[in-house]
Image (cartoon, rainbow, N blue to C red; front, side, top):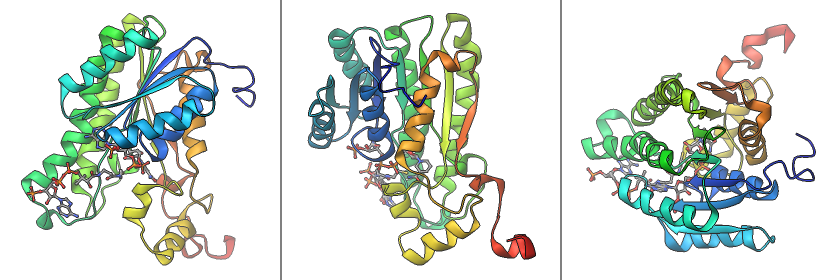
Length: 267
Ligand code: NAP
Ligand code: COA
């Protein structure tokens, strides 16, 4: 994939990216565009998503940004209809909208818990479900963004753990149901990624960041490009026999504590 941009591996393809006004998902949308795809972006904020699309058109690629809330199936469907009208059928759909805050279960209301489940899990169902009629089948690739919390129980993350665990299972169920139509369904589980809202919320101090890095096998945060490269791979025919998988791109962080205490003299 080293020459993915030069070779324009997504030339002639269309990608729809949900939750793309910032961070990891915007990085993925930019990557898709540089590899030749036309990209349609959605998020809640008209101002933010228009500016995000502008970063892509400023580079000379085709993009449109539209306000749509993934919690609202009809708003997603309307944005998809418009994207379909402009750019044709979708070859790639990426569902990455999410919300997170750090709070103990006793410190969140029913609505607080529901809000994150609605954005992450119901939102992912809405995006993938709504997209089906617009897909270029066979050959379409659907990718969701999950998180290590899906399989690692974490304090103060009950809402995110429950929602992302649901995404992992949804990925596998849809892969089974839609495989016969030639649609692949996978998810990427990023580890801690530098310069993102997610890590700003989970590890807001330099001390916390240092402590997290010291326990990761690769001893560093990942980059948005690491995740975008993974999404690009899953979007190409190089991955044409991969479906129903959760791809960890996390520097080994989900393996467990690889810190100096654990490694002892082998650190
Ligand atoms: P981010 O920049 O805050 O991205 C979240 C995006 O979702 C924003 O573009 C936001 O845009 C959009 N969004 C939120 N609610 C929405 C809704 N109801 N409808 C439509 N769009 C909505 O955060 P990030 O850290 O890059 O995270 C991106 C993804 O990676 C998430 O799925 C997250 O769980 C996952 N992840 C991140 C990390 C990490 O280290 N950062 C690690 C593991 C997994 P608007 O505000 O404009 O709506
Ligand atoms: N602790 C406890 N509860 C919280 C909270 C916190 N830190 N932040 C929000 N909530 C609760 C609110 O109190 C509210 O519940 P209530 O009605 O019972 O009071 C509920 O969550 C919804 O809050 P609201 O601000 O109305 O939701 P929203 O839909 O406007 O925003 C969030 C969604 C809360 C997830 C917001 O943080 C967001 O927009 N996040 C997107 C960016 C992001 O999280 N990026 C990282 C992705 S990993």
